Length: 242
Image (cartoon, rainbow, N blue to C red; front, top):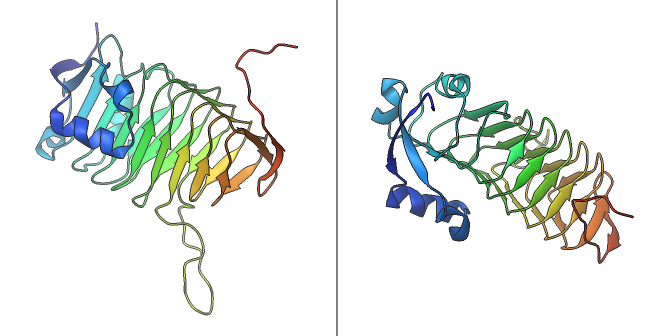
């Protein structure tokens, strides 16, 4: 039996918000999401927050206790997969939106969503170890279904600190960036994706490569720091065959 108490199904306003943030209708509308009503701190509902979990799925009590350490408002979190193997889900301010889609398996992953930011993992996102996904400063990370991320993948909208020109004071590094990963993307071990990034369908990012403020064309393999196209017209399979 789940330790949480479940209430109503996904509210229409919350469905609209998730769709607007990049959750696919064909993913969302098949999910039996129910709102978690207890045990949660008194401020949770008073501040307009909502946490949904799919039927027969669970979220560890310790994870929720850490999530609710510091108050925030108007956060929407929907977990359509079991969260037992994740390390943490954290909200860093008001108005955060997090969606973890079905058949997503991320071993020891840390998810962070700042104020006014969006983190969407649509479905079938597999990360083999210690991935970090970080959306902040009003930025967003939206991953389409069918992702394979090797150990140590780091997907982050911002650098968490300001880098500026000494003479003019102008900011030099990304702020509130938006990251989009198309369907069937493979991130190699220790790959870094940061800033304003679009990775096309079927693309492969090589081990320890840096994709930063770049557009990666569909069905290409990229590698290096910064990443560059090393091969076009590629695809990949989850199984390892000759």
